Image 1 (cartoon, rainbow, N blue to C red):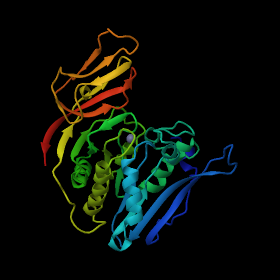
Image 2 (cartoon, protein in one colour):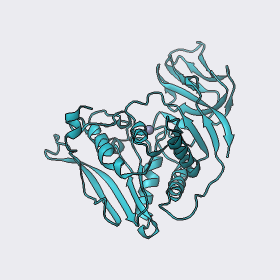
Image 3 (cartoon, rainbow, N blue to C red):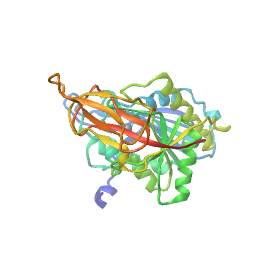
Image 4 (cartoon, rainbow, N blue to C red):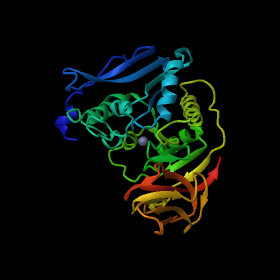
Length: 338
Ligand SMILES: [Zn+2]
């Protein structure tokens, strides 16, 4: 980011006071002049719950607008958490890319911005870049621990896992994985990114903070089970951070690893996809994961997609039709259970 842009103030105005005690429900107001509202704004919901002198947690959902597990848990937490139970501060932004969330799409309908590829953002950029910049320069400096909810959205479905990344600072890495363990999702991942540039994850990690992300299902909806995992994990993380009293309610988790890019399979053909294994099923190197049938004519052999490593199916393409370039599957290795 150029220095001149870094010095420009954010156009976003919060209606909450981050230094006040108690519960506040308000908005981050981002001016957005458009055809149907000349001096209009994007109103991003935000909740601040503060009491005592403990640390600050930032909890965010709908960084991608079609991922609902985090928002479902976070709207509930914002409505139900009692400040008398809090020692510290909880900042909840349940629908971070609010235009995308309202449209039910991964990226923003305003500028097609993928918020999680727009960090650290720009105060003089697109609407999506302005949101990223506000998070980077105004919300992250307040936070000691950051939890950013994701899932597969409309096009992917995942085993429900919490994740952290390998980091150069091993103390920080241990803090992040301890937080993943405290969240206690059914699965916990040592996560490899396809493309880490522009991610909130990287921005938080470069600030030396504790960062946890998730992939808690997907398929463009949220289930009672996945919302329950998100809710319980959030409370566990807040207990782990000392913001809520008590110990995390830790249940067994299976630890997964993505040891190399062999874990990803991308389609090279279009057609009707028929999976041969389901999420969580074990797969062997060379085993058929899915067959893609040319959909225009009968009698043609399907293209077989095979596992390039041993493991379990951790993610899969959701729509029944697939295109060349789509992520077909992710295989993870099971490294243990705690
Ligand atoms: Zn996402």
